[in-house]
Structures are given as C-alpha cells and as structure tokens.
Length: 232
Image (cartoon, rainbow, N blue to C red; front, side, top):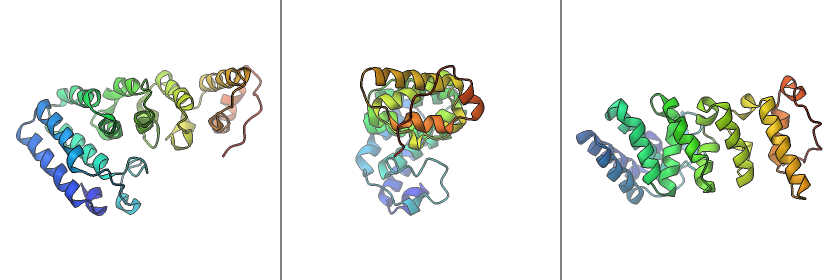
C-alpha cells in the first residue's frame, strides 16, 4: 500500500485496505473475486510517479503497469495469499486470471513473482503466454522476473519467440541474457531464416539475443549466423 501512498493515490490505498479487510473477514474465493473486481471501479488507471517506487522489488516500477489500479490489485492478491489457506491460493489466483478482464489479468501476472511458492504458478504463466492480447502478454514478458526465475526452458523459449511474433520488445525482458542457450539461438535463427525467405523484416530482438549469448552457446549452433539487423 505504501507505493500508492507515496504516489499520492491515498484513495486507492484506502480501497485496497478495505478490500483486504473484507477478505480477512470472509476468507473465501467468492469474497476475493468481488473485492478484486470492485477495486477496478475504485482505483484509477493513473500512472504513479517513479519516485513512489523507491525501495520496491524489481519490476514493480514498470512504466506500463505502475498505476494505481494495478498496484492496488497486486496488493490485494498478495494480501489475500496470506489470509487464504495455502492450498487454496493457486486456485484463487488462477480463477482471478481466468475470470478477469484485460487489466485484471495484467495485475494477476504482475503479482506472480511475489506470491508464496511462486513455482506453483508456472502453468498459469504458460497459459498466459498463449494469449494474443499484447497488453496481457507484456504483463508477463516485460519487467517481470517470474519467467526467467521460474519457467522451464521450453516454456520460457516459447515466450521469447511469441514476443517477437507479437512485437513485444525484449529490451525489457528481465533475465533473458542468463537464459540464452544453443537451443534458443537455434530457434531464433530458424525464425530469422523464415522471415528472410518470406521477404519480411527481421526483428531487432534477433540481433539483441545473439549479442547476449555466451561464446560457448554461440559456437555450439550448427548453422552459419545470418547478417544482423542494426539495434535500435
């Protein structure tokens, strides 16, 4: 709540506190769903100033998602995770995502890194990677430590490739450099070859990912790298 107060969104902070108190009074999924939806009407979609994120964990201050309504919903989800039975938390979080609107889904994905035992939400993150809603996908892919820290290679690589397909820049993909492997480089190269064969432009992220590769990873690829596009 302090990020809301530091950002001058005291009404949103009060609404988030009231919503969490309601869940504490009746710690059930139905209560959480009602309060989660209610916050969307009470907390404005107003950007909070970067100064309000002082001391925040990595990813919280993402420009696209550091808004009063997102921060209020994330605070409610994290607070509810401490109130509900631990066994009920995965079902509750998944339900909020699947029944929520676009901004509500974004908020759920922004909350994933700080939930207890976050590895339980890999399946939900993989489900989110299948969306064609760019803004929802970006909530997971951009400025979010969850994918790099918890998703296995297969799911993480699919997210990387889907981002290029959707046009979501990897400039803000947290931890990507540490996850580049020969397999990912092969997938990127295959995608580049397909784009060039079709006479289509090549995303800047292809050269970005190649530059991230360690010498060992780069030398284990079996095909000759194509010319790189200039980075923006």
